Length: 69
Image (cartoon, rainbow, N blue to C red; front, side, top):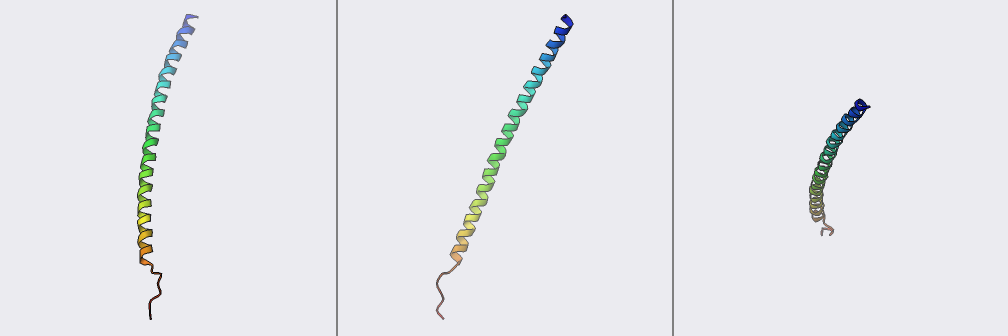
């Protein structure tokens, strides 16, 4: 009986340690996801600004008046 309890206590200690490691990994992954999301937003914002500038410059190049011939 004592041997069984000691084995169970060791197993519980091992599982608690493993649980702590897994929680640390999850926290790391969430931090990584936050960084990736932030990076994606910055990248897309930059692309949208370029697209907006392109659309504005193209619209300025288009003339709507017919030239006098």
